[in-house]
Each structure stands twice: as structure tokens, then as C-alpha cells.
Length: 289
Image (cartoon, rainbow, N blue to C red; front, side, top):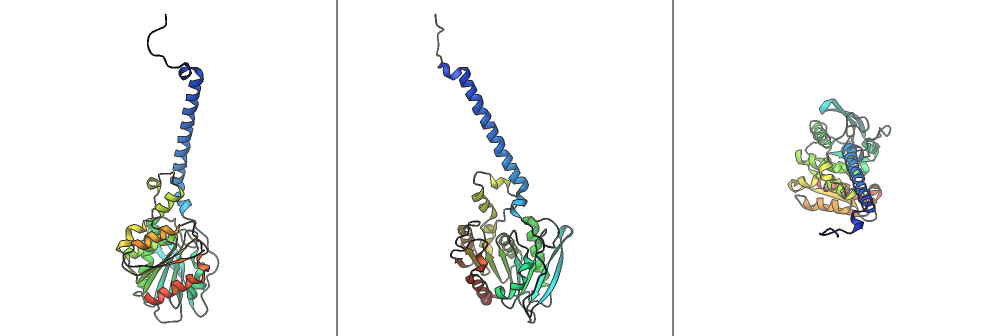
């Protein structure tokens, strides 16, 4: 007589089915472990993914007829920030403080200061860990260093610190926006800016919980609505590293109507070779500085 009751089909409980279940379970365990391992790796190495310190490019050169001063500024944690100040042959000129991208050694741009900025002094101070600056970069530290740089400029009697602009490029826009929020300049120039580094990272790693992993979100969008000084936003319409939508969102959130220039066909790293780039920056500074 057969036992009474319900019976599952033999294939669901047989040895072959058990082997398939075990294999599937093993695959899920391996996949979960791999996912967790990648997440931990991204969390642990994010400074290396975000910051690319560069050594000194060589000897900085001033534009013809300009002067060049080697600058060192003592910063938090025993760090010494190093860079150059280039000045035009004018008495108490206005000043631009430049914050570079994540792979820039900024003193290399000293000889182009007149072409880009006109008759204005330019402070090119390397991020900590870059060029001749000591220490290691991080969002909080770079912003604090930027504030210190602006204070250093405004303490100089040979510079007109009341006519000061901050200019950030790429990663440096995240520094420039926060510095502008703490030490309002006359105007701001942002090249290839993002709404937040976190938003950019979400696009690069959509399958990772980057919100919980990222220690340096550089949330410019959170500060923009409170900033009332004029801003120039320049971006490449073919930028694949920081998509134009990120720059446009930041510009739209600014506390005063922005000046926005999109350069057709230009990407992230070649933006400054477009003749419209220097024209836009210099024209904006002529109007506001």
C-alpha cells in the first residue's frame, strides 16, 4: 500500500536537484563575496581613485614682463602648501586664486596667466600632496587650505584683495564653491564643474552603494543656492568624464543668474585649447573684476 499524503516530484528532492541547489547557492555566495570585496576596495582606495597627485612639472615661468614669487603657506596638521604667485606690472592688481583638477600640477600654468586672466595676479597653489606641497589630500583639508589661501591673499598689501576671483577646474570646482561660501569673492569661474562628486560617482558605479562608501562627496549643489556672486560656468559639450548635465544642474541652482558657456565638440581635458575658452574667462573677469 502506498503511503498516503502529497508527494513532491522526484526531480525536486533527488540527488541531481540537490546538486543544482548547492551549485546555485555556492554561486550566490561567491557573487555576494565578490560584490562586497569590490565595495570594500572602492571604499579603501577612494583617495587613489579621486586624487592623482603630480610632482613638480619643472621651473614655473612668468609671462613676459610679469614677476614670479615662490609661495609657501603653513596649513593645518603641519602641512606646507607650495606654489607661485605671478603678478602683472601694475600696482595692487586684482587677484585670481586657482584650484586645479585632480591630476594637475598648477604651477605649470604660470606662463599662461596673462592670456587667460588678463592683467590680474594669479595664485597657483598646489593641493596638499601635489607638486611641492606636503600632506595628503581630502575634501575637508583642501577646502580649509583654500580658505587659508584666500586669507593669505587678502592680507597682502601689494594685492587688491577686495577684487578677488576664485577659479576651479573639475575637482577644483568642488573646492572653489565651498571656499566661495566661506570667503565670498567678487566672482567665481568654474570649468567643467559637477553638482557633486557623489552624483558623478553614481554614474560611474551605478551598481555600488556609493552614497554609503564616499568620504569626499564635494556637494557643490548644496552650497550653490546661497551664493549670490556672479559665476561663469564653462563646460565641454562632449565631456564624457563630467557629463554636461552635472555642470548645467549646478549652474541652474546658483543663487544668481549664471553665465553659462558650452563649447561644442570639446571634452574634459581639451577644453582650454578652444579659442572660446580663454575669451569667455577673460571677458567675464573684465566685466566683474
